[in-house]
Image (cartoon, rainbow, N blue to C red; front, side, top):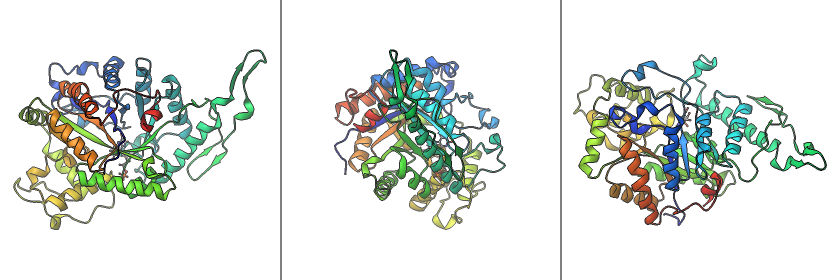
Length: 434
Ligand SMILES: Cc1cc2nc3c(=O)[nH]c(=O)nc-3n(C[C@H](O)[C@H](O)[C@H](O)COP(=O)(O)O)c2cc1C
């Protein structure tokens, strides 16, 4: 059942509204993608809508083949990007993504805390264990999920201890006594663990007024266990309501198992929105966006995630539970392959149908293709069912759809009493605590 808390809403700054064919629209402003003004405009719109945060996902690899038909969005470093828009905004949270698999914790503790200072307490850290990119960091193979999560847990502990190693209270600025800092409050952490050896202290004080919210992405059983032990929220891939209800119930109970209140972890699914003035317009928007979607790439995705090769299958043939081989040992993301298996077991879809589902086409996100009214009804339904605590909007299809999300849909949620009308706090943690 829904509690009476307000939803928590974030807006993705990955330009999902330019994916597929959308960047080719005359008004796409694809040329602006590597400028900070581009993102500042969206962050300001998001702040005007009183969103909790803007969010930038990230990867640390490039497959040039994927750029052949796309604009080459370019992966601006998320923390640098968010720092560049901190100055032009004042209330909205700034959620950066940093991988625990490839970076050293000292650097990350410093980067995120720098963003926190420069934004007056609005930084957040989306903790990812990454999907790819090992060869850019001297690793022949991607570490196993178990290795990645063990490292993530130690990494996060080190970062938090570094943040505590130089408390803001140590700053004195006592001109008369000539004491700038009370060095007795600054302590090394002397961490010696399985993955890291870090002496500390951090060379930057912590912004003490508010902790940095931790968000985690990844929902295999070990991912859930990690998230429920430390995260304030999970960025979830939940293409259907039941998957979201199961995930939220499980995370809340795991949080209690870690001695935390169930409410300590919020479930924020990605919400892919194709919004039109009419349902037909929305359906057309979706179809136009994916008109050239590469069948071969989708078949390869299904093969990687399930071990099932549909290359020679006719469109009308159903994919049934009997066709599913045992789950492959090694997949890029267990979360995503489990969701795809779940879909096949439940719906036994035709090949043609399967190839249009978010589990194959997108990132397994919850999807609404319809009017703003449809989206509001769906969000209310999920909220009432206890399927989520909010969402991260990932609008698709066009800039107009992204604007409709922020300028029309969010205000309607506020009118319906599901979302704040104004900020009551100034920091990201305060928004999440409302
Ligand atoms: C919704 C969602 C979003 C993710 N976003 C990112 C990302 O931006 N960058 C990244 O490197 N990995 C990302 N990941 C990958 C996860 O951090 C994790 O490495 C992967 O899902 C494997 O963990 P799992 O087996 O628990 O799913 C994401 C995963 C999920 C489910």
